[in-house]
Image (cartoon, rainbow, N blue to C red; front, side):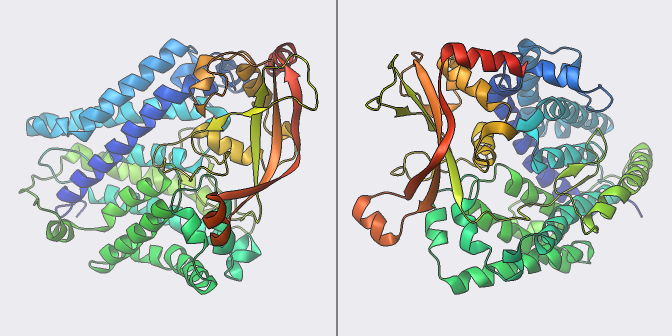
Length: 486
């Protein structure tokens, strides 16, 4: 009764999708973790080691806090993800396929958990814990010709349910604009990293925005209950979720949140449904090994116990979003965009080669890969890749000072030193690798141009200066602030 005889193809497709996201996540870690949270990162790794105990936030880097270990772990993760993506365990004899698969997926989970728990603010996103939770369940799906344990399929649906339903509840309890159906009047303009379609989505008629906001409530609050229904209702609910996430991917850059939600929707289908849509069919399956069935039942008991606190939080009037309740991120609570910002603020970082500052000093802007800086630049498409610095700058700009962003002064010091790894996080260094004499940060309010303004000027954004985020500082002043962070 616990065997998923009709879910071999579901497992196969789900594992390929999850492996692809793991591959992307480890590539992001290889490119960004060291300048952000490495030995000499914006939030140095020693802050994690000295700030928490291993049992509170377990990570391999707690014992080996070095950039070399970070590089080795990230590239091992890339290789293991590639092996999972091409389905290496499926090449093995039936008696070896599942044990090798379990070891492979367990290694991926442990490695990525190490990055999440040591990454501090730069890894504090809901899709990080969701990738860890989903990756842990994947350990117990089996491989080869054996049928997956059906209980693990149900547990994956449970992750999807909490992700969607939690997001729906926090919206109803949060900002008034979700209840009066005006949220989408602001969302496309104020989301963290707009993409090339966002400007056009923002300009859609108000009536469309009301309908899509109402549709958001239906898709997040009602549809999730159908994930557990018999076919074809479960598949229809999964298809609706995939369509919803696809629209979010078309109109914004949310890292791999939407892609991971789509992957999690795959277990709402059955092999029969997938065979009707894909040019492949499931083979005859062997029974699920007894040891895997037993492990799956033990896993279900653990998940049920650990779900008590997340469910209590989800149903609470003081619901927390994107929160983990255990150090291994096994069962978490989710929820996004409970509040919608009405105005978009941006921190523009500028530098100058002038040793003496005067009213005539020429300031040149650093350009970032994702977030708006140049009003004439069309918003780029970067998702499902994750630009962690750009995301944190979006949060930082909400405050008129960097008081809540302790990494920001250190970032300015890195620019004053022309640190190569930090500059690699940017799209353009106006000083071509040479250190500026001074840097500063200016806060602007950005808004989309109207169609008439864009036709006349070619600009996607209009902006007005609203304050100075950080006064001009020199290298010596920047290094002093950098030392204080340690």
